Image (cartoon, rainbow, N blue to C red; front, top):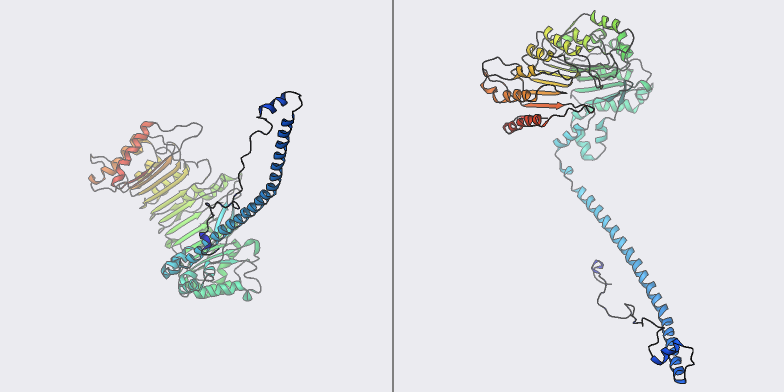
Length: 556
């Protein structure tokens, strides 16, 4: 075969007898005698006459000759079939080879295209943003709900993986100190053992700190209790912190209570620290320590605590300068038969006043029956509070209405503060109490009541929120975000009228009001006793869609 082998095609028009087997036209019936004189012999036992004998013998001789021809043709056809099967087998192998080669060609195309991929031409600034998004800081953690156990998920500091990919990535990684400035430090016997100065972990940690140059540092320090015998910071880590403490702006400490107790003796100082997270990994053991003065931090503004039931008792912190405080009280109190004694202990504590605190977030994610959010809220006075977020849990049952009452009391006790954001989740709200909060805090702009009880928001509340044209002073005039999710006992038309009024009449108020720009309405339906909205309710709520064309958002 010459030329391109892929141009081959089978010969379909050749009449050569060697390419195609011959066809035979055999008589349909061999046993029938169509000679009249011979036919009678088949119906009788008469002896054939001499002429008939010659005819019959001639026919037999002819048949024997045909058998000889068939015997000769049969092996030839068998050989032809053998050759055809070989050709078919060869064709199938060639077909498989073609398909395999096509696969290899596709792979080659992908490989060549990879060499032309746009990532090879990405600007350094884009690579920096991509690399920055891969950094995991601080050490991630998750809670096991059924036993309130924390799991930590440390990963290798990402820049070390990035720099090993290629020369370009290494150059970019080494060119930007910020990629090396977020560091997760794990304390265990392998990383800070007796021979720690010869340990690769220590050397890499020091190298990473030097590669961060003068960029502000974010440090996350976790003592791996299962593999650590340390009761205080290892000497090598202490020496490192002495050298670089002036650059630390964010610090996460996941330590045992004993290690927290040992921190003051190290005389560390963090003059640039702005954000601090304290997490005693042995939970309630921290309650046995009082007024731990960890280290000076004159610029501290943000504080987050986990598993600390009495922060002000356990730690001595510059409360007057803290502007953002959040807490995860997973195990504030364990269930026990002496709940009243614990409650009384909280009530006898001195109130806490935070003159600068603007954002306060408190939540519980536990399945325990008793966690004293009310006692925490009752102790607080927050005169500058701007944002309050309270999440009461994720169980099927809602918390009691005492929590929302405590929120109202806190707001009253605080002045009220210039609060603009109120988020409240997963608890009951006493009928009329929500309206009282609205009257107490006219500065509210973003209100989200989610997973609350039926009747938490009544028709009277919606009527008070509805704008009037008779000069009546509007309630919460700055409100522009409203999220509600409950079983909704109020009339849907009343709700629609309220939303529509705060959109269409906002500009005619004196002074003009801010329009509602976002409404999120989620109705819970009992699966066993379905109370699905009727067609009239659906039609009423769809009226709000007409306002979407002018810029507002609404969901149902």
